[in-house]
Image (cartoon, rainbow, N blue to C red):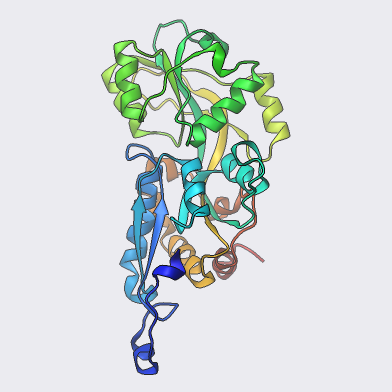
Length: 319
């Protein structure tokens, strides 16, 4: 996609004045998620940093709101996106041809960096009788849209606990704002999401009604973490109005990914700009505050793009 849209200098004289890595002014698109999640502003931050360095790189960047991880991987496969944000479990399954990618392994996917941890979160009305995961049996629950990483992770966790969609009254919402409205009106009893915390969508819900977060823990979670390299345990902090407790859960990483078709110098430019502006990046969202440069390399479940490797080597983070 990048190559098709790139304006190439066609004369030796023009080449002297080209500032882009590939001799022209290029355009890249980053697939993100819904506008109330963290993927969308994260993509916006990365694009803003790229655009601020456009005179040096010759690359212009834009973000695209999507339905989430699964849709982003599909966008990369169809060459409609150049980069994308996606959960590490979805990326792993896509690369290895598992789950929704069965028989369609995306071996051309490449990781760039692991940006921040995300935790599966079950939001319910406070005092509604749902205090543990198995309490959702027979209740009206939104598992997430089919084209989302939330749905893939929620399905895995439900299966580990011996639950399936038919055990619930599955209610599909178009977006997280609709989930909040339906939870407040009683049309649903809870909804799942995979979030970096604090998440604006949950803060909005907590300001509208009394909510609680349900722990996702126990032997089924232990078994998932032991079996799959992209899962890890985590704790949602006590950061929402009316939720006084920390909440144990299962986590993945939010990855920045691309494909092997994206030119090395383009990936290098984006990665180098992220590393150069890392301290500023960390201050732009609470979910990034605990990040360190070395954690950008932790939890990458597929091969890293050569352009990213080059940038991390120059920063002294890879041998």
